Length: 342
Image 1 (cartoon, rainbow, N blue to C red):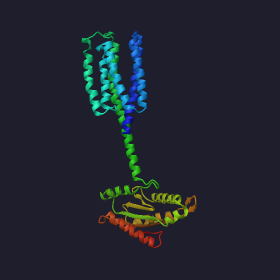
Image 2: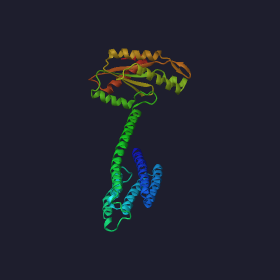
Image 3: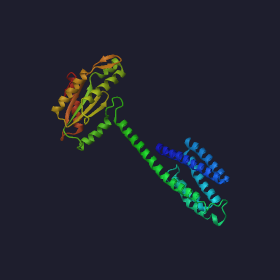
Image 4: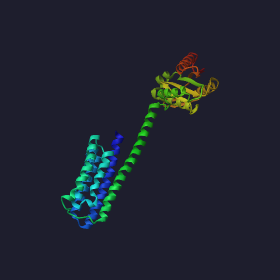
């Protein structure tokens, strides 16, 4: 809805500016011809467009839309009344109909009424010569007829082209919003690792065969993390979490899943990795965390991690694999911590 409002408001602003510019040029042309009544009408039109521009800028899009359509229709009626049908002013109705049908902020019923009334108005204008003689006979003014005809054609092309440009821009904005939403919904804001929601998507792809088997799973827990929070404060705890997350990313591949499972727990999923190769990777991670000096406001500290791992094979389920990881993690904690149990 916000994007639609931006689309309507932008379209109206540009349309109003273009329309006002055209009427300035008309005013100059009719001043050259010495027809000052029509000059005055064009000056009045420009004033109305300026007012409409600020109404649109204030966010009153529907009111600005209505004024814009009404102004074009009135210009068409008055110009036809003053100069006759030969100057093609009656066809300006089409410039009002196209935006009303496609872009402006009207309801479907309002759009239908506006568009349905346009052929009636055009036919009424075409019948004008049967009842009166135009005040200013412009039937021999080829230049004006060509100008009006070209304004109608260019105005229609302008409306379609502008809609395409704005629609493309809005599509890009919506795509970016969707990408941003997916990023926010799949990323842990503190560590910037993938979260459990993303992990579930990873599991679905794993089951669907998008990753090579076996896949090594490892549940990792920061040792004595509660003590870190209690002794140094939660800000230091956050620094520890981010540091461990950084080590995990540095020691794994881009195709691996590194996920903050919750609290101080992390989950690793390493496709195309068996327990033999996985043991080396996990030991490398454990050693890297152990050796990492973490600078904090409370001074430099070190932490260790404990992990429980097992390989997901074609004959085991993810749920069973995670349960085995938890059991191995518990065994590692009970066995003295700072170790990887496979």
